[in-house]
Length: 223
Ligand SMILES: *Cc1c(COP(=O)(O)O)cnc(C)c1O
Image (cartoon, rainbow, N blue to C red; front, top):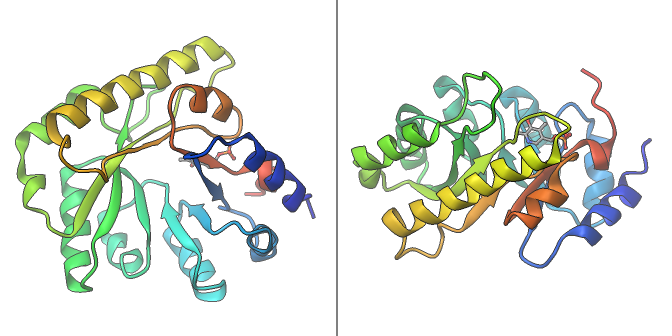
């Protein structure tokens, strides 16, 4: 096995106080997660509902699971009973479905709104304009069972570190503008989830509070 414990320790040593690690365990077997768990790691991230369900059923119940992938509305009901945070919410429709399902099981789910700043063409994430529109539309205020805790983003998958830095910086500026305009009076709107294996050090310099790291801890994924 990859030296999961050693890698985890190195990553944790890089994190300043107040920056939390989500260990991204997608495509990795339970024994890898158990190795990180034995080191004290409790927050893990997955991006597929079925894989997450199996892992949730078979691994310790005090793990905090973050859903980090694109979530189809018809899958929401399966994860809402136990999920800690849904990180990549990029539509009002999804937000409303999470609220509806969470109400059914008497929970309030922490979510992040996924921002799309990267230059890649992808269907996912809210452009800054779309984010402002969603917030201005206002019906999210009626949702009693979701708690919008901040923003999540991925930078462009490029080697140009200055480009990555500039994207995270835009994310951070947007975060503060949104905070000021819509969430100034709530302390839970405070999370900025950016930084993966290849760019988490830059992300931390640009103000992330959550890093999502897989490969550096668990090695390459076998798809
Ligand atoms: C897979 C994934 C990660 C982790 O990527 P690594 O390069 O393995 O650290 C982080 N965030 C999201 C949204 C992912 O899908």
